[in-house]
Amino acid sequence: MRRTLFCLVSGIASLILSPGPGFAVDTVQIVSLGDSITKGVRSGVTAEETFSSLIERELLDDSLDVKVTNVGIGGERTDQALKRFDQVLALEPQVVLIMYGTNDSYVDQGKTASRITVAAYRENLEQIAKKLQQAEARPILMTPPRWSADARTNGVGDNPNVALEPYVVACREVANAMKLPLVDHFAHWSKTEAGGVNLRDWTTDGCHPNPPGHKELARQILPVLGKAVHSQLALAQSDQQEEKPAPGAPTHADHSYGPDPRNVLDFWQAEGDGPRPLHVHIHGGGWTSGDKKVDFKTVKPFLDKGISYASINYRLTGQHPLPAPVHDAARAIQYLRSKAEDWNIRKDRITLSGGSAGACTSMWLLCHDDLADPDAKDPVLRESTRVTAAAVSAGQVSIDPKVIEDWLGPNVLKHRMINMSVGESTIEGALKNYDKYRDLYVEFSPYTHMSEGDPPLLMTYGGNMTLPSENAGHGIHHPVYGVKMKEKADACGVECHLLIPGHSESDKYPNANAFLMDKLLAP
Image (cartoon, rainbow, N blue to C red):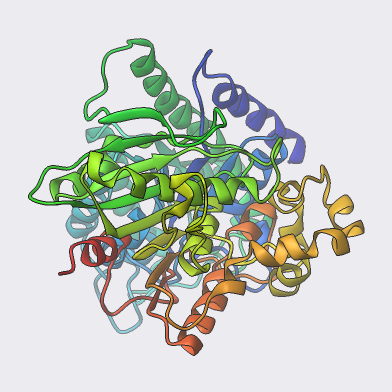
């Protein structure tokens, strides 16, 4: 199986890693959305054996910068998925794998009909796909796997496949009508069963896949996933090669805020009476990669509300270890404040956002004491680095290997962010010289600086709470970071909201934008 998956993944990687000269590829954000089959973890199946983890591990092992976030929830139907969809969109996915039907179609004991009708299921699938398309994410529909022939009968005494098959047909029809990619697990499992395989050998209970079953799911997903990602990247490359002005081009593009070539930002100036609030985005990439480029669809909601928007680049740790990436971001905030009169910026209304390492930097700036130096010769450095609020996604609240290994297990240390942040090429080197780097690790961990009086914070994470962390990608973006930060924020009396699908929600803000606009537009 490992060899087969490797061949599939190598083909996908060649598509994604070689999109054409001059085309920059950021981390590919993939979300797995579904019920307990997607969630995967159960007796006999560890988190690292689920199809989502298999896909991510294979892609990461092939040196592909990808993040797969599993937000499957046991027992969930399509109507319930729609109720939490803002949390899915908050992850800013580029591709979403969608698998429902097993719970939608099931007939409970004492009942005579499925939990929801085929018509409702079809409509819900269409709504899910449309919401993703509106967010410019690419949906991939998947039929659920077939139940085994000896599975426990349902409430009307039938094998559950009898009720499930019309929902499978509806899923195929939605994919065909909306021209969406389809992974037909039901067809594959049916064909395999007809060939003599007992599906009980692929499941824990006749329904839920066991480790071999998850490998079969991954085997079917990878080729379709590769085509979907390649298609999206090819479209983006084509748009770049046309060299036409992009809609919503920045008011100031690639504007220098410091001495290094990476010290550049894009700024979109909002219209409105008086100085305008400003939102600043800091890209992710483990401080080792990434770019300030953002889709205008992300910027437009802010401009529509009279909020200016900026996105920054910064030096990367491959050549410039800490403090460079974080102090560059601090200087960018100071520089933007220094342009308040020219760019009509309200200096007391500046918020931050970022994913992964960008989230770490954002939280550091939110919680750290002001770096303004009133005696500096450079007038930019006299400006404040303090901000009004921050909304972040999948961020590290500590980068100290001694701390995070205790929180998350050893796999988190496999991520290059931890060693490269201090200039070491391997984690072994970082740990060997830990005493040398300890102060840096402590200083650039936002958790260190959270204290009474800090501005409000909203954090969003994926729903996979499995401990220890399954792999490097899971560990470096683990929801436990958010749990730890919220615990400290609550103890300090700091306003803090934590969104983790199926585990934590805010009673005030459904998503990051609602939080940010409330803080930016406050009187």
